[in-house]
Structure formats: C-alpha cells, structure tokens
Image (cartoon, rainbow, N blue to C red):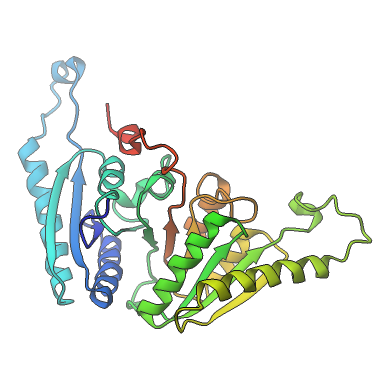
Length: 310
C-alpha cells in the first residue's frame, strides 16, 4: 500500500478542477511528491430501444480524445509548479477508480461544483464514497470566488472527538502544519445544548463548564503527547456546539479543515451522514478527510468494487 510517492488529482475540464490542481501541486512541491493528473470517463451504454429510435451513436474514441485533452491541459498547468507530472486517462466510474488508486498513492485531491465528473459526484448521491472509503487522505477543494487566487495553507483546524481514531486525524494535521509551516488548532465539540439532544439529559446542577474543562484537559494532553518530538504548537479548544456548525464557522478563518472518516460522538461518523454534507457543502476552505480504521478491519473487502458501474 502507498507504493507511489504521489498525489492524485481528479480533473473534469472545469475551472474548479484546476483549483484542485493548484492545491495538489503546492502540496506536492513542499513534500517532494509527484503529481498524477487523472481524468476518468464513462462510456455511454446503448439499448436496443435507443438503437431502433435512431439516436446517434457517440464515438467512444471521441470521448476518450476529449478526456485526453482535459487531462493534458491540467497536466500542463501542473508543470508550471515545477513538479513531476504524470497524465492518466481511465474509462470507468471516477469514484471506483479513485478508491482503488487510494491504496497506492499518498493523497487524493478533488474539486467541488465543477462541470460534472468528480466535481458533482462529491455533492451527489455518493458524496461520501471517496472520503469514507479511501485508504489515503482525501482533500476536497471548494470553488473560490471569482478572481480569488490560491494561497498557501497558513492556518489549519482539526476536529477531534477524544477517540483513538481521532488521534490519527490530529497526527496528520500536525504533519500538515509542519509541511506548510502553518498554525494548528484542535477543536473538540461537546454538543450540550438541549437542541442538540446529546447531553441534554444532564441535570441542571451539573457544572457544564467543568465538563468542558475536563474535555479540554484531555485534548491538551493528547496534543502534547503527539507533539513532543517536533516543534509544532497546537492550540486546543473544547466548545459547546454542533461539530459541523463549528467546523463550518472555523473554515471561514482557516485554510484547511482536517477531519476523520470514523470516530465516536462529536465528529464521529462525519462522512457518513448529514454532518458530512454540511461540512463539505458549506466549508469555505479545503477539507482533508483522514481515513482511520474502517477498512483496516475489512481486509477481504475491496471498497472500489462497490462503486463500479454495472
């Protein structure tokens, strides 16, 4: 696993996917990695009815030629960063192809709200497929406002929930902070409000500030343990609130949000339900999703096969 020191970036010909290329190339340059630009395309299927109705048959080779043009344009853009670039064109479902490739590379980067392909799929019916089932970190880069330029990562926030899997997310965030020379903040959400329905059962006499203090202390201890061998300083916050809401708010003031694909409570299951959609759809900054132990426990399961087109 991870036998290629490379970052795969998915492109679809949209301006938004080029923003993903920018992010991936900047990350590759500071870490000495290669860039693999991938464009996956699905061949149309034909039925007897469509053939009899006289519908024009699309030339499969023309579709492939179009994909090649898309990937070469993106590759040329990537080479301006001075990184090693490889172009890849593959027929098939983008989700399945990326999940399969995630077992061989160090990171996957995709854009959102592009012209279809990778972009729309991340916000569609299988929006959690790539981040939830990837074997390597996945970075989802949102569309910038018109005229906005790429800026290096200077501020990072990571969501932590106190579980062992979330330590992996914090470790990855620490590494990112080292690479970018960025400030790092670790946040643990404790949704105690009655509307949250999580800790609303606590009697009124319970000191909720004391709970936050205890959570903050545990988070501080975790951060200190993971940074004892490097020079990264981690700010820690334990806050009463909804995890997705807090992360979305933080995304307006940072350059990267880091979360785990599995956990418990708080940020747990972030990419398995409505919380994931909230973060991915509303985050102003790129979101890095770090895989934890979900697929390590399923050695005989190949998640890529679940997303192949029939």
